[in-house]
Length: 416
Image (cartoon, rainbow, N blue to C red):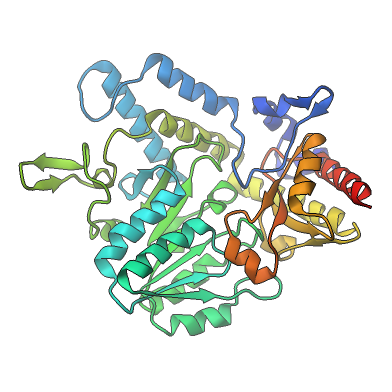
C-alpha cells in the first residue's frame, strides 16, 4: 500500500503534514535524507509549535499569576489557555490538569503526595511486567520507604497482559494499580477501560501512564474513569520540559502539596501556610510558560488532524513494517499483532547487537532506537539484553519503512 492511497482513504495529506515539520527536510549527510523512526522517544515539532513559542518570547513574555501589567496578563492568559486545551484534549476540566516537567514527574507526584498520605506498611501496588522505569522506580522507592508490596501482572506469549492473572492479583486487595496504556517496547495497547472497572471493584485507585498513548490515540478520561493519568508534551509534537498529571478533582483535593514555594500558596506566615486552590497547589515556582504555550499549539495541530486518523495511520504503518521485516531471515518482531498495538515495532536480528544495527542504519540516515528503552525488567523477562526499535508517527511513510528494510539488508550483508 502506498502513502497516497492511505491519504485518500483516511483524509490525511501526508505530504502536507511532512511539510509542516522543518527537520524532516534535513539531510544527515549530503544526498542522505533523514528517515526519523524514533518518535516513541520524542516526536518532531511542526512549525506551528516552533512559531507559537517564538511569538510568546518575542512579544508576550513575563512571569505569570503575579502582576497586573499587560505582559503578565497576556502571559498568564496564554498559559491558562494552554491548560484548557490540554484538558479538553482528554475530556478533563482545567483544574484537573497539573503541569509538571514530564510524565515521570507526574507519576512521582502521585507517589510522593497521594502515596505517602494513603499507603501504609503491608499495602500492595499492582503494576505490570511491561512498565517503563518511570512507572516502576517511583513505586520501588515508595515501597522501600513504606514497606509496601509490589505485584506484577504477567505477560502472555503474544506480549499482552494476562487479564486472568490480573483478576487474581486484584483479589489480593491492592490500594493502587499503575499501568501503561501503551508499551513503549512491545507497542501493546492495554485494555485500560476494562482494568479500571476491575480495579475500582477491588477498591483500588488506578493511575494510567499515557506518555505513549496520548500521542497516538483519542483519550477520554471520563469514559476511562481513571483516577490519575500522566501525559507528556514532547511525545505529542510539543516541546520538551513539560508534562501533566490529570487527577480527579476529589482525589487531588485529598493530597498534600508536592513541592513548597511561590504560587502554590494562598497565605504564608512564619510557621505555617495556607495552600492555593487546584491545580496551583501542585505548581510551585515559575513554570514552563513558553513550553505550555507550545504544547497548546501542538494539541491544536493534532486535534485538527484527528487522533483517530493518526492512530489508523500508525496501525497501517506498523502492520506494513511487521510484514516487511518478518520476511528477513533471523529477524524477530516482538509484541502482538498490528490490531493490538500502536506505532512501535521492536525487533532483534540474530547474531547482531542492536547498537551495531542502529549505528549502521544511522550511516544511511535512518534514526532508530537501540537498548532497553527504559524497560530493563521487561527485557530481562523476554530473555534479552537489548532490542532495536522503530517507532512511527503521523508524519511516517511507507517509503520510510522500505528504507528501513533496505538498511537492515545492508546490516545483514555487513555481518554475513
